Image 1: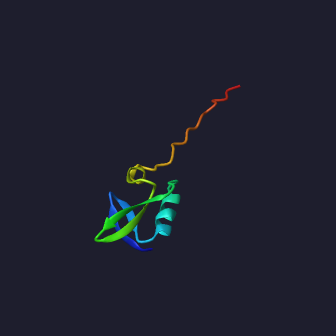
Image 2: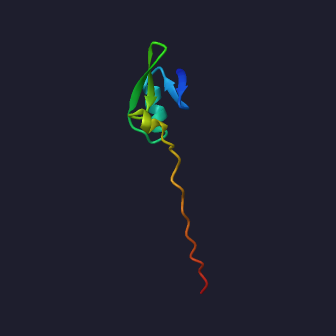
Length: 69
């Protein structure tokens, strides 16, 4: 892994492939770039605001039928 740094707790990678893989693992499409110390870095998610949104799984709801017959 070619991690350059973190921006807003989101990893910035030196390759597009790593950014896309990170994003794919979080259901994010695409990537965007940042300049970090004069080097272009790649971050998963089409925009920075998309990448920084919390990608917590949807809560599962369970229903109980009670079932007293």
